[in-house]
Amino acid sequence: MFHCLETSLSIARETLATCIVRDLRLRGHKAYLVGGCVRDRLLGTAPKDYDVSTDATPEKIVSYFPFSEPVGAHFGVVLVGKQDGVHVEVATFRSDGRYSDGRRPDEVCFETDPVLDARRRDFTINGLMLDPLSGEVLDYVNGRADLDQQTVRAIGDAERRFSEDHLRMLRAVRFAARLNFAIAPETLTAIQRLAPAICNISAERVRDELIRILTEGGARRGLELLDQCGLLVHILPEVKAFQGIQQPPEFHPEGDVWTHVLLMLEQLRNAGPSVAFGVLLHDVGKPATFRVADRIRFDGHAEIGAEMAGNILSRLKFSTEECRQVVSLVAHHMRFKDVRQMRPSTLKRFLRLPHFEEHLELHRLDCLASNGHADTYNFIRAKLAELGEQELRPARLISGRDLIEAGYAPGPEFGRALEAVETAQLEGEIQTREEALALARLILDAAA
Image (cartoon, rainbow, N blue to C red; front, side, top):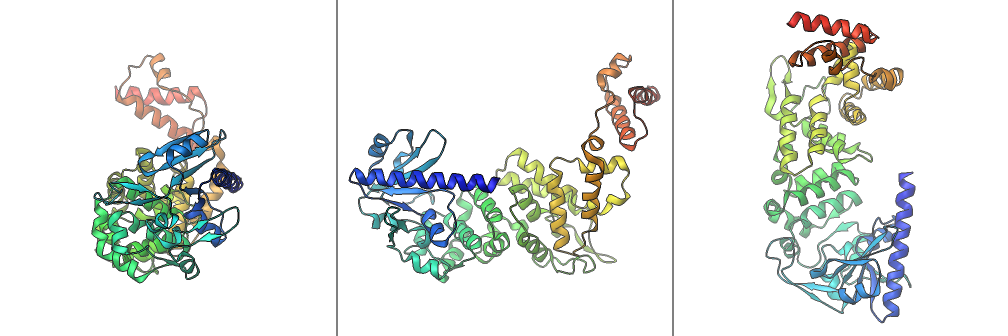
């Protein structure tokens, strides 16, 4: 269903973009589809978004189209939309001045020549323009050859492109990983030289690119390229530290922590950010806890890793909710080995962790990338089907209000009594309100 919705939106955006181009042409302007939508169409994949580039100024674009508004007036970008929420970015041809902050040009000059607009873009495969009315492709940067050769190449001087906007270094990795393209040698060399400059980019922009690298496809290759380009050590030194951290071969025949995480990333399919970062960081505590005793051990690595993961995600400006979920994934990933020995109440509480399906998926990937055993995964799937929602989350038999009405003053013992009641309920030892009150009275009277 989601795929059908995305397809419908893509068709609607393409239709709107084509109508915009046609309308601009009728008004005497040059106008083309540009960027990623052209690249994706030439590769035979459906674009998610459509962008239009034109010689019309932002003021004219706004005057031509209802439901439009400037979203980057200084850069000539106008969002043109319809009442149903479908939008297309329409931008005026431009050339860029100096980039003094390593992010945006200090000034731009609107142009009438599409060649100048193509040459100021990041990569040749993103510099192509397409006339949707005739099907003609305008290629001023040799982008079609790089598409054919499956190569990500900076337009013009690579170091200049990356000095203009340091984030382009991460974008190069993202496109190469998602498309399974190579990074051109001179482009790769420029990234390696300028890699430390990625520290000048805001954490939010780095975070967003990392999410795309890990969730748009090719996550394993994305991490390998981050390392090859020299970016990983600056963005995620804690992940770089995985390299060479050996693991007990009886549990991890695949090799060190780095290899283990790469194999997990290779298995990612349609994962959201929480699972992707859960995979990336689930063993982040291992380098700090590595020791050799009777065998290689990582005592407490889940707990230490959870704290480290929280610090990393906070550094990258993830939301509180996103941090909470990834930290939970890291903190609980070792509990799966104990599920068969858990008391019913403990198991039920484990299975009803928020977004437990993400915990289970992390465990599945963890197994695939180590011993390959799926016994615990299958056991839990069977338990979830057997128990059902009512047994996992039964209605509470009593509440704090019931204890107050029974004559008890609120205090710390309330929580302990109610937890004991819930445990007995989950264990199947009590089933009625009266039984619950009797157990709570026993606990509260003993504590008085």
